[in-house]
Length: 274
Image (cartoon, rainbow, N blue to C red):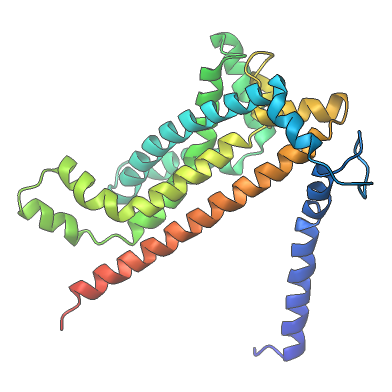
């Protein structure tokens, strides 16, 4: 059935309203981060960088940021390696229980996060991992792997395996073929997955609230504590910085995906018969 111009305009209007509703908090948080007031008030009575200065000079905030970076980097490394290997197995091979394993890997992306948090807490109590960075890294890795698997699987779906066969004919072994042929081509997908894994770990708060304790405090947990205890306006400054970081990382990820598509198109054009 052909859409009338009116229905198309109504669709655009509806999508615009939904988009505006989703980004509306940004237009409140960002001005609040530059407020000269001593508490959260909107609109700001004046402009100041005092809350950014507080963020960079108060030990609680800097220590929490450092912990988040350490946990996120370790999580990204583990999730990228494990997720890439899992994607290779799921895409390249057929084996018993493949569907079940794929469902288990993707479960953290589908299940309510509060259920995962309670389950992890129950396991960590017996293992004495509450309040440890190692425990946070393991939990965040489980949450981040599905993002890596999704990105790498998409890259592998469009991969031409004849390139690997050509490398094998030239005498390259499986490991060398992977690092010299496969990995460079799927690299944009791997990097995209790593970026999403980093964001997932750096912004995670629900599981962290259950298992961080009082020693492994990350930046999102510090922000949560700041909101609960004294409604610290520093949260607005931190939120603005996190928004900027997320936008930069997502733009970089989008650039990598476009680069991958151009690379695959170039390879296909080169192999096409004249």
